[in-house]
Image (cartoon, rainbow, N blue to C red; front, side, top):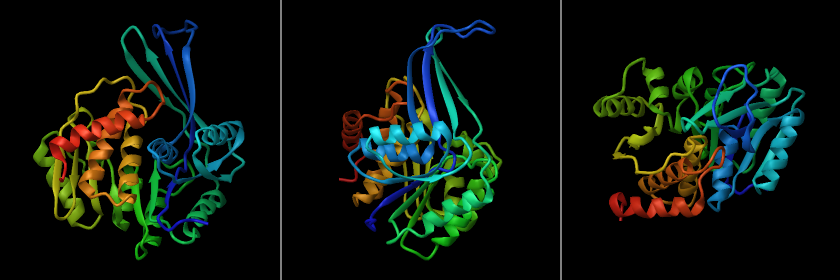
Length: 317
């Protein structure tokens, strides 16, 4: 039985995230890896993991197939994340993050997901729309795998348009554009993703604010969160504009920072925090995730510490 205040996450292209360290990248030579780690991954799955870490709960829905899919499910169980897999014949993908000690750089490799049959993606769609009672938030996050129509998220948004369910979207490219045409509650692009949508440069603050406002005023979304890496983030709604510069923090790995941000923000909104405070909680979790190694997401203690710091400076009081 679902609570109507549930958070459901949807990951159509889940993966097994593998990370490791090497001393130095070199061609042809066999490079010995160490400190390797394996985590369940993909946008929505990471959002669910972050919510769990922060003390909340959600249900992650994703197509599961093959030995990689089995590993994703087993690891989610170990991390106490609730999930409902949809069995598929295809094998879920893997992605790799390699940290080179010599340069202190991280290299990220993402394999394409399996092509989903029409029957499979339609099953995912049906599973989501038949949830009863309807959840408070559906967080659809990540790329669409081959075989899934580019307007999948748009179809989802259109289905829930006149319901109490809020669609939250973290994706890019054409699938983001289609969803904006259908209207959603919240989107969280980074600067590069927003530049792709508007086919323009957004290096200046005023240009970022103007473009975000345009999208909101045209009805693409109610809330637009633009993440700007070390430069912080920008929150735009019809009635407010709130920019917070980045917090000074050690960057160990950027993997999962955006998902930690989104998970924390939606969890805070579910807890009926004010929008600006939820936004600050998101920034805190995103910053906390930067300080963790490899595919580890935010730590709760670090998130709370950063949040207190942000509240002192920018809180709504």
